[in-house]
Image (cartoon, rainbow, N blue to C red; front, side):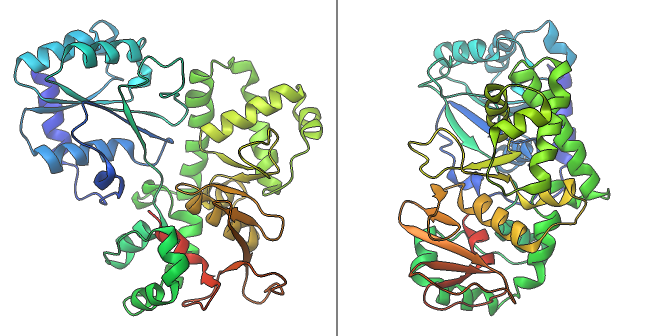
Length: 390
């Protein structure tokens, strides 16, 4: 176990100063079993290491372990956790837990029998931790780590310290909020860059960002989705082809029959694949009524960076804007397809996204998100402000 403490200490020493993620403030740290889910590339490992460093420093009461380590082909989580607690350990952080067989059974055993031990673990966005068949249902608190919001990106790039703004505050007080923000920084000077390369934390690395996103997409398809959904590798080309077909035209109204012909599989398989891609945070599905509809009314890429990378930057601005709105607002709010506009938020706010120089006539008494406004008025809100929700 000493070698794991040495690795833990080394990783914390070389962590640098990571961006403080808003999720850190929302987690109930008193709970004994905490799951951090997120798509590949959003920074789960950095988040866990930041947790260890900021809350425990180099105290040996906390230990970070990556379960990719070959050591865990023979050593069980149960025996390792038991030894750790007997040596004074209090918080065990397990990264990439889904790579370990029977991980959910063993975490449940630890929760039931080691009441003096807290376990925080990370896993893929594809994992189903709270469904009826889950071993951990009722004992785990699950949180989703998303990619950078525009607010987090802006704080990092501009050196600001803006806090999240709830959706209802934006609706009620967007003029005052925007005036306070624009008095300190010009958000639109950063917005286009964010749409292209600001969602995934690895934009900080000195590598080609768009190529890195494509690599990330393939890892999600080949490992997260194929492994966890138990898809045979021979069907992977069909899944990849479906995603590319979506990216070329998204957002679009899906014709399941046409898609099934295009990738040469059944309609039922296409519907399964769409859900796999959604769970992997590669696409978003928009319904006319999310509580009743079974077939999606529109298909979007999950975030604007995915859209830009797959299409090599050749993307219409209106598509980027709508993808951004759905991605940022849809994390905390229910979004359906609007009959009058583009989106219906929480069953009551109809929003239309409008672009500078191509503003739609305001033909209904709804809400508008404008991509080139610094400060709005009445029911017209700057689009960038919806990136401050988390």
